[in-house]
Image 1 (cartoon, rainbow, N blue to C red):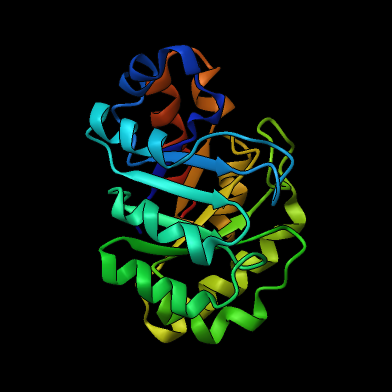
Image 2: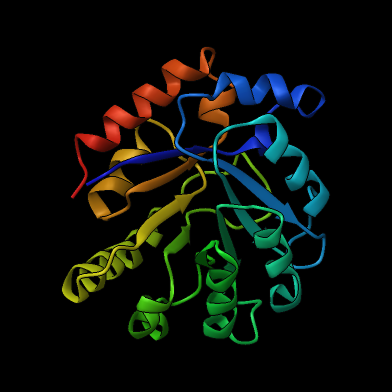
Length: 220
């Protein structure tokens, strides 16, 4: 199984983003948290920032939309060049239709679920998505503690993906460090969003390598 490490720039130094992106050159993708101060109680980036990031990093952008009305706004991020656009099941009016539109534009389509959202209603819809993001903290702020009770959802997803023979990335986001990444990998995740443990841990390349090694040793 391929392990992917996607550092979240939510914990980067916003005043020096180009430099910060250079620090994570060994990552697989750059995770960009878009928040609208409605779906979650925080406000971060918008589409113009995504377009700017595209110009200063060769890494593909993994955009996570924590916003209301993604049916309206998500396609714009795909059109802006995002490699992957993930929206929340709790916010979308028609998740399947939106995923199909994102794919038609050329982006990977991702579905995200909050810690308290059941995954069972979406298991039969998995072929419509390229990625499923299981939030391991409540969306909205960085630096929260990993919620271990979300791991059974990952197990259900991994079982369903394997049974259906699908090529879907299973991503986790929130509280990921060298300890919790092992727990998530053992539960079935293969794509890991890490913020504080990468940007605040000294040499970002060393931190990325350590996370990759820890996950790879325990991946399904």
